[in-house]
Length: 248
Ligand code: C5P
Image (cartoon, rainbow, N blue to C red; front, side, top):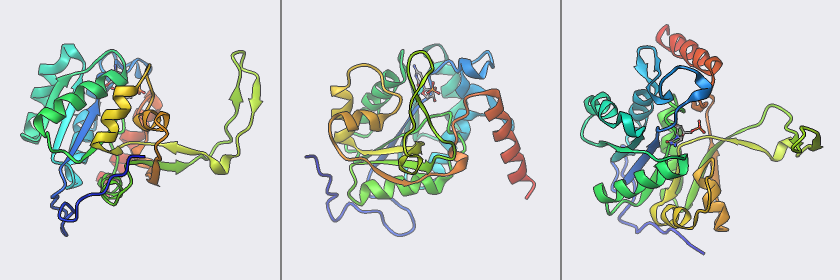
């Protein structure tokens, strides 16, 4: 079994300065068709700035992230690089791939050229643009603390049904044992590399690939603001939440 033991001298120092090297990958190459905005979802503005800008700024605001690698729609790489340049030299932009898994793999390959000694890798959906920095810190700290794979989760409020291909209910899982999974998901770098090298087919999240290896995945508390902006309704919720924050 893979065990991640950070060497004693590679620990987070008080005040948030990191001796551990942390890279964050942001898959942002989706078309975002469910949002119906006529442009890649990551570039849809909320309170005057694209979702992607909010997402990357939140990662950097955690004080735990050394490099951010964004996987952009291939046709939009230059536009995204221009957009993110004001956030500083720690932010890199590469072309994403056909599926989310491909975009993550391409960003990981690039990250390891920028930061070959990286210890911890986060994978964070651009669509979870308003994830509070404390969630980012909790995930990094759990990986540094020895958990090789960590996901932020929330309890599930709805009863969830499993259905067959015809939409007929075939089961009702015990809700108390279910969790909704958010990002950033955090990993020891070697584990995520192994998970992606072994991956067959696409996965909706990276922890799923780690689970296929039979490796344990730990959880930390997520946050309602780490919701994934997927539909026009979600966009309206995000606008309202931010407007409320600004009005405080
Ligand atoms: O489609 P979904 O909302 O699950 O996508 C999750 C994240 O993966 C989004 O931030 C999207 O931009 C990204 N993605 C990607 N490359 C793709 C498809 C999706 O980076 N080919």
